[in-house]
Image (spheres, helix red, strand yellow):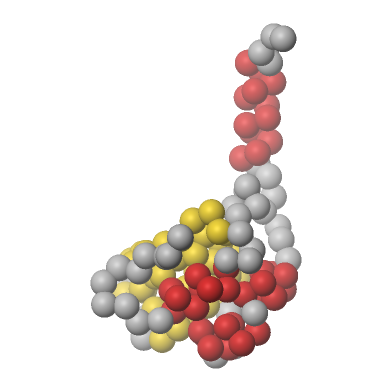
Length: 117
């Protein structure tokens, strides 16, 4: 069996990079869960092109991003003076793991947050 032609490989990679990441934010919030969503942000949510941001308090927020490979990335972020500091992240989460990771990222940790595998 011959390997694919180089032009075909480049075309597939371009298609993957240009893929529209449109998804249903309501489905994402449903996988997070109503109780977790309300406990983390009090019902506040900001939409982004690839996910949502749940503001916690005092500049802290939890970012949930949808990736091209049908997984999620959860980040614990602090916003200060127009700068964004990432204090930990969990990558390649299935939709069943998103709720626990979001809640854990929203809780206070003295030091960087590391998701439990």
